[in-house]
Image (cartoon, rainbow, N blue to C red; front, side, top):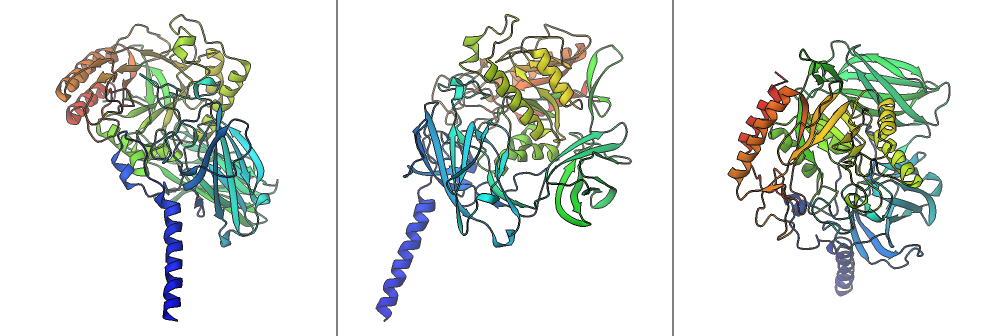
Length: 608
């Protein structure tokens, strides 16, 4: 009897060990490229488990990140019966942390499959399946029923999967197609053959996948717009299934104390007073807490927690007739790095939330008050970190369209890029989707529709639409691109040193990119050779001295009329070695204390 029990125990142990190995033992970072310290901390059973949507929080949710089945098939092929192996979601298939590190390309499609169970206490609720971001076209099946599609690589989307659920285990499949630079879609810095300032393709799921139970009547989104001048906050809830007689209740709190509260009919804007408001700024990033709920037949049916910051971005002529950017009605010089948001191990996706936050913390440590998020959009938690830490954000629209931009168009010619009807429609749709996603983020103060004429088209029309869609922020129509008298900002790029070769007396003038001082550090390089910077030095001291020399030149130009400046860049990225940090974030390449002192001197010219 004891032998039988021992035998059965061994069989069961073998089963569970085998099951564990099948689930977790197959994953490890792939390739021999450099990695961040956070790659070693990654647990495939517990991947990016922080709440993914800080601006609209509900109590219950379920993280679906982890090991999924994957396969790569020819475009248009049937769904695979047998999968190739495991991929760690949400890391793009080309990344080391995916455990795959394979290229897909426009002639192939990437398939995912996993299963999940619905918690028992979610009974009688609608179940939403959320995707933080998938690049680029995603088709989704639940229990072998196709439930929908989404195009766009940078904004979240979801499906109500309630009608398609069965008893017990549920099966989800996702098919992704991404043509990278062979398609008309926004793609940022991704190209099929990365070199110089262009980087590795990113295909597939690259942000958190999660489940959420919601009532049939629920809050889909919340749009908040602060008004510092009137001391009010405007809240517009976007509701699903609400009836005419339903009521929306909004409450605002200051460190737990009720500030103001109001009720209104569902579908109306709510405007609440915020008396003696504590203003949000990089120096004092104060955030108010907020609760929004739906009442139906005198019963609360849904409630979400949120936050907002009371801040105003504007522009005004100073005593010398120079148009200055203002923050909360005071002249405010904005100074920060060009931030690509790339990772050597995760590409578009930071290995952990601590890693995601790290670059922002480092930017503050360097003495900056702003980040230009360059032709990429981040997960919602990145913007929440900016809100809480206190850093202004200029948000780019990722560039796109077929082919390498510099070959298709001479962007110094003064003429615009010619897009197809399809390409224009994709751009407009995705830009609106990105703005909708980020509309209520306090730290975002500038929208940047185009960068350096990469796919720049109908500039005046796009800038005017952007301004009319969000009049509460400034619009930088084309950072370093073809210049039109539109938008709020004239943005010059000049490498390596700062220069003012154009000036507009009626708009804000900024230096949207400069610097790019290169320093290649052995054992911290993505590529062993052929690394690139606008100018290159051999050690940290020389690099720091050159940075300070450029800052001294910039000080003169700030007095002459610049209201903002952006240095290239936060970190090295692939073949670019012009970061304050190495690509693996393991080494600071300049003297941080000296850079901080110099940066503060530049900022204090205006922000005294």
